Image 1 (cartoon, rainbow, N blue to C red):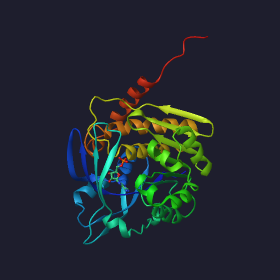
Image 2 (tube, rainbow, N blue to C red; image 1 turned 120 degrees about the vertical axis):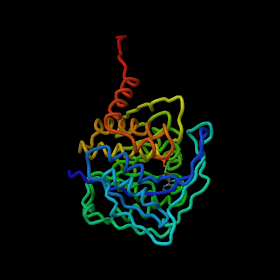
Image 3 (cartoon, rainbow, N blue to C red; image 1 turned 90 degrees about the vertical axis):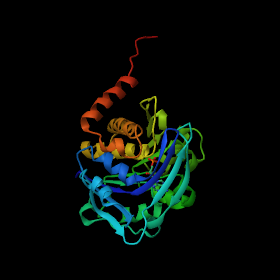
Image 4 (cartoon, rainbow, N blue to C red; image 1 turned 180 degrees about the vertical axis):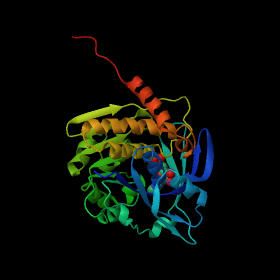
Length: 310
Ligand code: AMP
């Protein structure tokens, strides 16, 4: 396997309101969070995305300085970058989208740079499934690992296209509400089975502050999230999780249930940093040393012994 990791997704400006404060027009977008998290691991990461001429040079530099290749990021003159605004209530697990301005996304025709057309890992971040499919079709051959994310916005608008795409991928990473929405099943086990019947071998279901689950054939893995007294901003937690999962896979180059378990643990640890500050702030200061300490914390809170032999 080569160590090229291609990420498709939004680079955005976000407006965020949480019980602990608000920010507007800050750097966000799923490709940003995925790329920044994946860059903590050993790989050659490239992003395919689109931005408007309002996008600040310093923001692009922040992404490039993490070693991420942005030759696949199109800049459209006289246009505005994708803008999303959301609000979190006291229960930080549920959020309301207040505004989605597609702007440059409306006419996005992605072009995968030649250098990344042979990437062994392709991450199809949360976007219009038609665009996700377009990028998949531009690859020279089928990537060894194709990972898909989506959200309610696209599920509601493009259900059929999404179903076609799900048939072509290896790993899906979605949250519990989205899994229920796609399958009309409340039980996450039933939902995972229905999704796996469509094709993907591995179903990852994110559960916000309750961690994540992995389903593969008849195997199940469940892991908690790290609890905090204060969560500042959950935005990007799912994408940071996904970036770390794919980054870990690109470094370890193995797709097995056990390796996915470790990948998911790294996803939980990286996303725990994201939620401790607004936007990408904490992620930008994250180092492998800090991540390693948090991995140990996560291990400590989730391992136990069985001492009784009934
Ligand atoms: P997450 O909190 O991980 O689900 O993702 C948050 C990011 O998703 C934000 O930075 C937004 O810019 C981005 N986002 C919000 N809505 C959409 C959408 N419809 N398509 C793609 N990205 C989106």
